[in-house]
Image 1: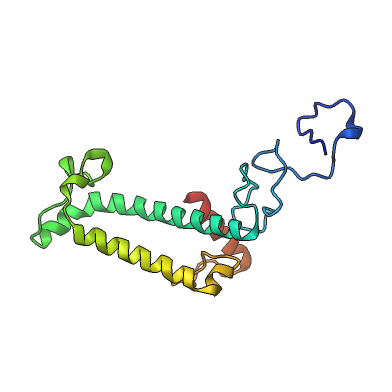
Image 2: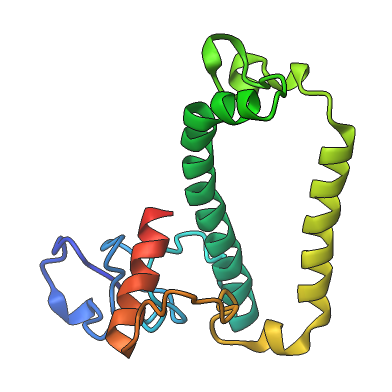
Amino acid sequence: VILDPLGLYNDSSEVSDDVSMSPSLPFLPRPALLNGNIPGDRGFDPFNFASDANALRWQRKAEMKHARLAMLATVGWISAELFHKNIADAFGLTSLLASNDRVPSILNDGLSHAHFPAFWIATIAVVAASEIAESVDENFSSKLDPTDYGFNPLRLGGTAGQKRFMQEAEIFNG
């Protein structure tokens, strides 16, 4: 099988015409499992991480978790810098913001000033409990969309087209 996406071969009899090329990397063949059925799929898997259905499901779940975490972190970071000092003052607490009212982070040495071992222990325990619950649930690991928890209080994405649009918006913005 010879692929010639750039049209470099003079003799086209040796070139395969029936190979579907990746929309995101047009010089590579489209991965077999990435056929456009999954929202956000643009055929990008140059290292073949999604070599089988289970690997694809695992990669998809990781991608969605990281996208959602990034979107929540963005809102949380902005909200903390805008509202934390006022909320702390209203309850008579000391502000935990770093110098110049910045959110404590690794980048501004703010985490060294936050001494809350109970917070970190509780955070790790909650995350571990949710991961263990997912790994025990057989139905969860076999779902086509492992990121669908059934939580939709605003009833967004009513029709199949609207739901796909919302899912693609979520993955692209994450």
